[in-house]
Amino acid sequence: MSNYPNMSYCMNNNTLLALRQVVEAMNEEGPQFLREMSRDERRAFEQLFSTCEDFMSLSEELQEEYEREQRDGQPDEAQEWESFDPDC
Image (cartoon, rainbow, N blue to C red; front, top):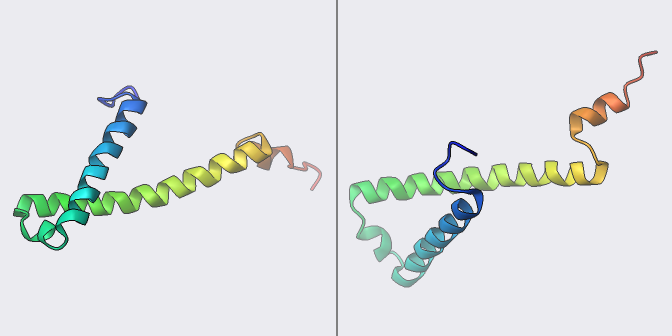
């Protein structure tokens, strides 16, 4: 993460606050929220939507992998080699 402009806590916290601001505006303004956007704002909004979808997919995958490692005590690759039987 050394090539990111924010430390991990700041990156997550600042993004959370900004996303909450967007959600609040969407709730308060309803369809007007989209109507009042410029072309560039609309493009950024659509990219944000796509990025949120990517975030959800990847975060679910990472959470599942993390939970597997916690259960097993080892990463998946290590588990594969641990049960390897060279006599097969």
